[in-house]
Structure formats: structure tokens, C-alpha cells
Image 1 (cartoon, rainbow, N blue to C red):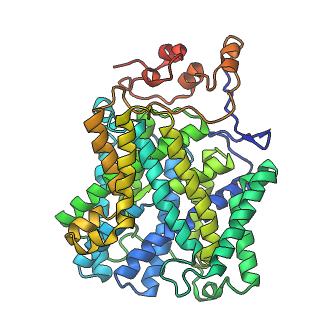
Image 2: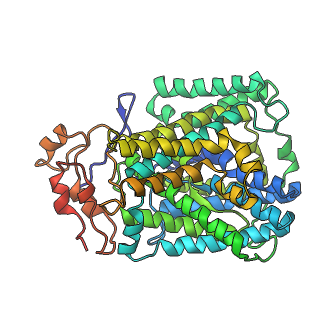
Image 3: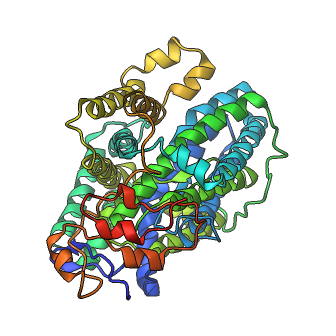
Length: 521
């Protein structure tokens, strides 16, 4: 039967961009560039922080940024387009994970800083990427067993933690950028507030197309106002070169040392939880079933991108939660928009002048847009938790205690900086690390391993889907989110027969799904 995709309503009109639709080139370019602007600050902040901590020269820092953008583009195309059984084929942007910042700085300082430190970091990054890639190729039964660690109460908590931890990043930008001489100046908040208000107005009264590019228009409009008032500087554009090609092992041959490798392997365990949560979240948003094979493909893309990052002078990669929030806000679900964004990122990675133009967006403007998106990330996690039975005290404790652990590094930083071993602090001084670890451990204590293969696919928070056939029309009208067994079976890629259906985890009453799934092992 022909697929009838779910449509998300925007101001009473329907979105016409399902996940596998290839949009016209102008729309692909606009939507793709919006993704680039939305994630740009998060993409470049990691090489900037790490490079400054390791005392790299300005030229070396620019090279790191270009290498990061170039690799981000390749990684995002692999994740969204898919190569064989690598890539989730969902609108997921790949970016450098914030979780790795503290461990990489600790590794680099331990190696003496400078480019010599980068070689040790890259050795650990390459090894961790290969290990993640290999893990995602485990036999289906073994992989499903591991994925049982991540029921909705865990993934929902992790996504919520990501949003909560990222919101202060947006607010720091709204204040002018942490460490800037005029940090907290009211003018930065004025730019942030104006940008945020403009975005919200577009979302409220704009046509569907304008609403879908509201973040892009907000960033452009805010930057234009800042330029007219003398607060957007484009001087670095003239000082940047036209071409900056990223070459493998630019800083030298990587060094492989055991402690940095162990540290990076732990980082990748946390990023696997992040990517798993983001995969389910974006699958929920676009109305596409996510099973263990989809998660495995997403993690393979993570591992391949991370190993590639070590080769191309970049860092570990993860599915970016920021852009999950953007997909939810804009209702543009096509994965090919992310492919277009990947092309833009590759171009930016090759053109330092173009990257310098994008980098000229003032912190306040960027912070206003980022705060909105990060809030939407937290909301995606809360919606996932809404499908958990939180009236049960054990589930409520898992969520509440995990959130408390996630807030510890930001609330009491002195505990990690002055009263903890430096190596241990580099690992634990992260809200995402502590929150995710607490959620997994507490869930094992209170609930044990999940009974089903992976977390149940959350219901799509959208208008009811159109019926697949005349026989299912009546049930489609009465059900909030009808099951689509025929469509799922027809559209699914061939996977191992050992991968069971998600039918057992489907909402009660969806009996048809039980008969349409992939055969159980």
C-alpha cells in the first residue's frame, strides 16, 4: 500500500516534508543552512576550548575549527544519507560531543600541551571510534541485550538532562559569551531577547515556510541589527584565507597510550547513550519507527565519524541534540535537509573566509536562538518521560535523582576542581556523564533489564495519521496514533531475522502490530 506519512500541523496547515522526501533545491539549501547556523556555535566551541587550553597558536586553532567543520559535514551525510548498514537515515546532525571536552583537556595537559598533546588525544579518539563501530556490529541478540539498558525512563532522562545542561550554554552566549570582557552587559541580553522574540513571533503568525526557517531568519535579522549598531565585527573575514584544506594527520602520527584510550572509551559509552536517546527522539518527531537495527546503524555512524575525526584532526562525534530541537520546532522532517547541511559544512571547512562570516554572529544573537532550541531538547525528553509510568515511585526516583546528579558539576564545581583527583575529575565533571550514569545504574537497581529488546517507540506527538486503507480508517479516526504495520513492514530495510519486532513494546490495543513485525528469533 502507498505510504501515507504523518503530517505535523503548523498554524492550521500541514507540513509536506516527510523523512524520505527530497525537497526542491532552494528549500534544501535554506533548511540545510539553518541547521548549520543552529549548530555552528556548538560545533566550533569544542576545538576553541581545547585549543586554547593546550596553548595552540591562532593558526593552529583556525585549522582545528576548519577540520572540525569538514569532518562534521562528512559525518552528518553518513548518518542522514546512510551507507549500507551505517547511518540511521534520520535527520540527525553529527557534531563534536561536549562530553569529551574535559577528558581531552586532561589528556592534553598530561601530555604537556601543544601539538604533542593533540597526537595523544587523536590516538585515543581513533581507538575509541573503532571500538564503538565494532560494538555496533555485535550479533543481534547481544546488541539487543545491551540496548535493554536503555528503556524510556533512561533515554527520556538523558534527553532531558541534555537540554537542561545545554540551556546554560545558550544563556552564557546570551550574556555575551563566557570569559568575554563585557560578559553580562545588558546589550547582549537585548540582542538575545530581540532575537528570541522575533523567532517566537514568526512561529506564531508566520506562514508555514517562514515558521520553518524562523531560526535562520532570527540569526540573520539579529546579526543585521547588531551590525548596524556596530556590534557585529567582520574584520576577521579579511584576515582569513580563501582555501583551507584538511589533510590526514596534519599534526603528526597519533600516539596510542592506555590511560587516554580508557578515558575516551568511557566518553564514547556516554555518547552512545546520547545518540540512542536522540535517535528515538527524532524518530518520534518524524513519525518513523526506531528499532535496534536503526540504533545500531546510528552508533556505527558515530564510531566511523569518531575514528575519521581522529584521522582528520578532529574529535569524537555524537548525534547533536540541538538540531533535534530544531527539527521539532520547524516541522521539516526530511533527512536530505541534513545531507544539504553536511555539504554546507564541508564547504565551510574548506573556506575559512566563509566560516569567518558565520563566526561573526554576535554571542547575544546566537544565545537567543540557542536557548529556544535547547529548551525544545529538554521538552523532547519530558515528552518521552510522559510515556513512562511516573506514578510508580521507583521511576520517579530514577528521574529525580538522575537530574540532581546532572546538576552537581554546575552547582558545586569546586568539588571536582579542588577535592578530586585530576584524572577522575576529567571524567566525572560533566552533567551529562553523571546524569546518564545515574539513570542507567538506578534503573538497573529498581527495574533490572528491560523485558523488551529496546525502549518502546514513543507515540508521535502529531495530528492523527491518515488511514492506510479503508479497513483501517475507522481505527485511525479513533486512535491517537494508529499502528502502521503494513507500511512499516514494506518500508523497513532488510535486517537480520534475529531482530525481533517492536510489537511487544507497542501500546496496548495495537494488536495488528503484533502480526506484522519481523519474525522473532
